[in-house]
Image (cartoon, rainbow, N blue to C red; front, side, top):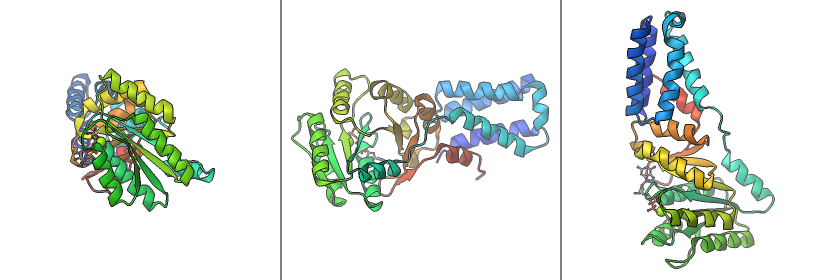
Length: 303
Ligand SMILES: Nc1nc2c(ncn2[C@@H]2O[C@H](COP(=O)(O)OP(=O)(O)OP(=O)(O)O)[C@@H](O)[C@H]2O)c(=O)[nH]1
Ligand SMILES: [Mg+2]
């Protein structure tokens, strides 16, 4: 995972450590760093921020202070990158759910994103995680559009022994979500996970439909599901969805197949919202908590 990004940082680290850079050499090193970031699917604005910070520090006289210590350079780069990505509040989801449970209210989560990013699979994984943590869960099939969507969610629910609330294809997704919440309230179920249809951020009707689901249910959490393999596209989708829904957090899927790593950095940077979990495979247990600081530290580990 993330090998490309890791090697971009390694190359930069090495270049700064081994040489005292004059302006021309620094320019060359920075150029290579910039290309490597771009190749790693890091979004344009993030590339600019990172390269301009490095440039301010390494050109000319200032670089002298690094010349003897690889450790100093490593620390400088790590602090700089952490600084660029700090700021979003971390979300402790299980704790939030626990609090709601304590007052006898179901905790509601809506999953949003474009087609095929992994929303339905992520809901199944997340339901599995919650069950293991001792919570009761119900699923709402508010994807009443795509053929097979109801059967797909129902199959996951059966495998996980969880109830699913659904209606016919073509039904109002907001009504399905509301039914599920009412059901959870009357049966004292702890968590409602609402699956929605994949929609392109350019489809006005579907985006408005999504706003309706959110208005009707007023969920405790809106999670954007982004596909790491989509790279920069995932970043622009995140921006558009954020403008429409002001979501609270991201789950990044298919990270197991992503050698680049740029989407993780970029989505966090452009939305200012934390990535709370990453999908690391197709099985129910393939969902891992994500923390940006540990992610950045891991980029500096030599492998
Ligand atoms: N390798 C890998 N595959 C994943 C991951 N998450 C989801 N997938 C796969 O991605 C494909 C699409 O997943 P879905 O959960 O159906 O995606 P969706 O967003 O619900 O799709 P729509 O409902 O059509 O919008 C499936 O084949 C999943 O198995 C992941 O973390 N890693
Ligand atoms: Mg789906």
